[in-house]
Image (cartoon, rainbow, N blue to C red; front, top):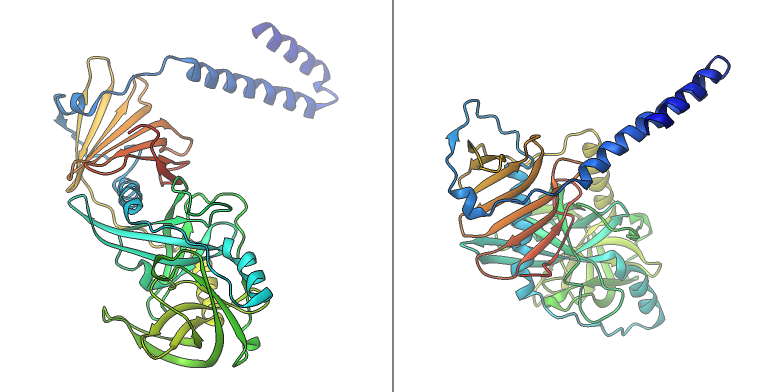
Length: 419
């Protein structure tokens, strides 16, 4: 390698008088080659074994003097990972079976369903206490951008700790349980009952729904609805627009009050349809299902012009960097060393304890978290963005979960191959 480098530099020197760009190019190749050699050397080194949780607990810790929390993954990110894993692990137990819908509206209904149903997702939400699901919810969402942005109702996600989204399967009779995607709340409007979510790492090929125009909505025109009524996933129903209502106000059983322009519909709406699209015969979205008055055959959807205004403002705010950040907790930090020369940073939070393990070069090689309810989250394989690319979550009871991550947030959640 050294001989080649000298030869290349001599060649570069010979041509540098007339071709300085050639010299810079060759110099860049040399630098790149050196960097790649260093990376290859790291990758080729013998991996260091991560101590077990029990071993980490028995170390002799001392309180960190400066209290600096410079660990690979912070409290908010750990909470996000654990909540996503818990939702997935427990949610599989309550996930209903997929039922193919029966299409009854002829060719137009079939065409609309086939075109738009891949853009309709299932949003699974849950809250936990003592490793048990205290509340769970199942709602509908609509892909509005191939970058992974999803529109749903505020009431679908409000009050829940975390959520997982499932895409419609291309084939088969139920959603792929190994393809649960982590979500982030981007923006919400309680007044209009709207929420904008984003898949943390969206898969390629997402197809957004086409947004319609409120001026084109006609009373008595046919509409099509896709959603998950009573857990009957990706079901189709149809009806007509009864009226467009400006400044319509409504209230849910939890006391939340809302006000927006809505489409009054005559169609079949049930729990689980919330967040589903209202579509015209051209498969354009005219509104988002919000609520139904039981026994009255009166159903309502937030109008498309309200939706467009909400989405545009939300994305503009995000581009300006005004996205709200989740509050984080500051734990108490302790440090220790193993007899193998590894350093361990232990942070004690109110509901979990994290252990970040670093090698002799201070490079993070693993992270283990124990939750107050006995769950254990283990991260390995440091990624390019400071997090870990592989996570395994083993709850105190329930299914063990595997998580892929390109940063510090969950990208893809699935069942672990080994429990």
